[in-house]
Image (cartoon, rainbow, N blue to C red; front, side, top):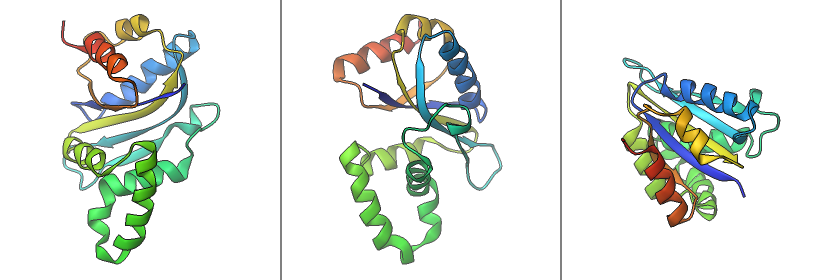
Length: 162
């Protein structure tokens, strides 16, 4: 089963550094990356930059339309106004079926601010101990995951400050 996680970093470059680390671990067969996307919001910029990882991953599982819709709802919808509201509301409603609801959107929107970044990544077959070791000293914050409560607690414990 694939795991979708969302990580927040305290720097605009943090998510890029994290994906570089994950790609290295993928080459060592420590984790399998299915798909992902990065949001980077440099200080002083009006809005964040987004980048889909499908160019670095063999085949995208979710596809560009998913990431485009998600990032549009997260960061750009307030800028588009009410004209598109009804149509986007219907699309957003369909995301609820995969665990992406209004609370998730609000939470991520509130936490990704200028000077920060986020990594949205779908993975499987991870060796948690080795992934944890590779990210020692990182200040990543887990914002969301589709893991069970027990699995999420183990993941949070692995990345907690030592």
